[in-house]
Length: 433
Image 1 (cartoon, rainbow, N blue to C red):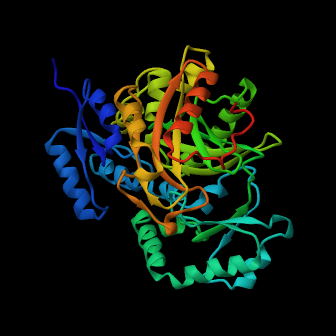
Image 2: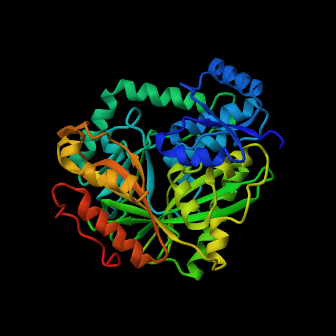
Image 3: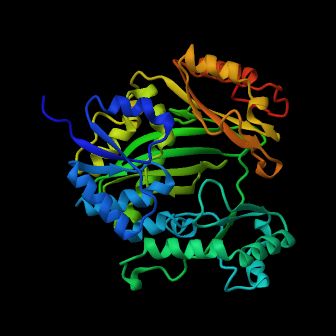
């Protein structure tokens, strides 16, 4: 048998072990662990990849996305342009590509007064969302209800030289070598935008990719399920709330949005679009990530048999990802399962093992074969300062069923059994019954 083609997997996480073992049946996967993205390190890693016959590398977390670009570029593979990548990494710039966006405005605390910023917000847009444009994982996001809250957040940023320097350093790296005349004049550290009531809309996560010649390929769609208090419940593939007509509209919206990024040089890479479908049926961007979303690999595998990790690696090397995409299978009415990432959060301070029943967790893993991603360890301590309105993520679990009612029953059984103290403050949405 000929040697299996070799690929590099950037910073694999423990919960990915089964997926990587499966990949190794037809590929040779090498774990690589970049520490940063300085040129000397990227050059050395590329040399090491060439020495091991690695054709391309894949990065699937936000912190790995730029390393994916830099290393593949040095290996001679086509990658998104730095300018297109920069647009994807700035929440203000990404929204400027929307055809019909809701209210948004730039906010630059270091070059504008509080009064000038306040005057920019229309009366009807209070409360609004204020977001740091380059932070990820939910950091730097604030609901601004009044001027006092806005002044407090802006003052905190003006005093945080470490964060300002981090943003400046990241921006300089992303734009290294880019013609300054092509860089947008406005790329602020914050964006003010319309407040979206999650009880009045549905959020989705769309996965697609762009080929080397600029063709946009629809890959998959996942529905984000929330409790009535906006706390995330889980992520469902395929969605349960989309009609064929809306699927047509989503395709058109994705192609309209991505065409502008393709024109900026976005090529030969997956992309991950989060968007809201509003009460009037309109579609609005939440954000775009210039990578595949690693946590959905198992959703696609369990529901449709597709391997997101393999498809991303093949695409990076200039090959065609294998098989029909989950999106096309779903739209064609092919047989599939429903898969849910169940999100287990802690909303109280204390030791994690005192919040969750780890005998039950072990039974799920060992006896029922449930895949679990451990975000916290049993002996970790949750402090009051760690708690947000949504709590602290403790575990993610993947469950699958032939029908949505079976899946709902499985999720409710897990959630009612996994906590040592019943979570009486969560209110399920009406459709999750």
